[in-house]
Amino acid sequence: MKLFPWKKNKPLFSEEENHLVVKAIRQAEKRTSGEVRVYVENRCRFMDAIDRAAEIFFSLKMEQTEERNAVLVYVALKDHQLAVFADEGIYKRTGQDYWNKVVSEMIATFNQQDYAKGIAECVIQIGDALHTHFPYDGDTDKNELPDQIVFGN
Image 1 (cartoon, rainbow, N blue to C red):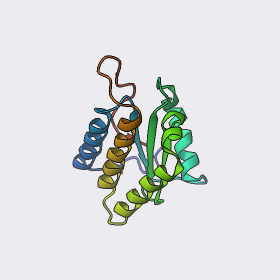
Image 2 (image 1 turned 90 degrees about the horizontal axis):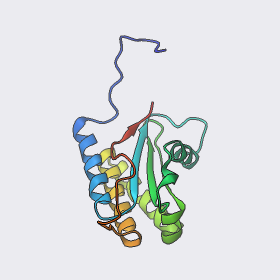
Image 3 (image 1 turned 45 degrees about the vertical axis):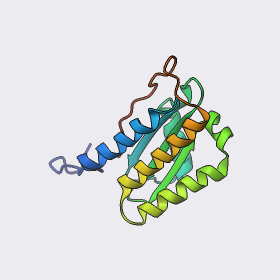
Image 4 (image 1 turned 135 degrees about the vertical axis):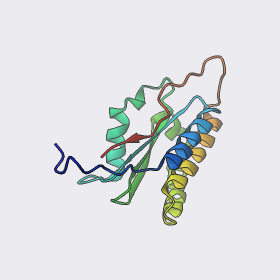
């Protein structure tokens, strides 16, 4: 129940920002059998961002991709938290240093207050890693997960 039902919640992203991120997801997935999802919410309360990302990853059933090569980009805008959670297939092939670098670069763009651009650039980088380790195969590849951004509260 909303405390003020007449008050509309402002969307977390503009239509243009949403389009930029979805376009990056589609571009990244075009070259790989891997999957990328983006989850954006305002708050990450009482939990570490990576734990929240893991919780969302499994609630979205992202571990059910055939090659265990899905990646979730998680952002809590108002709490200024983010995490990238990679399934075991891609994580084992890239290692922790790769994911630390991706997060650092996303933070650098976020520090310029351009969240959609930071997410889109991160998604493209992830797509490059997925392409390296899980290249696209036109005969067997299918889009296993939706490309739209998932918006939480």
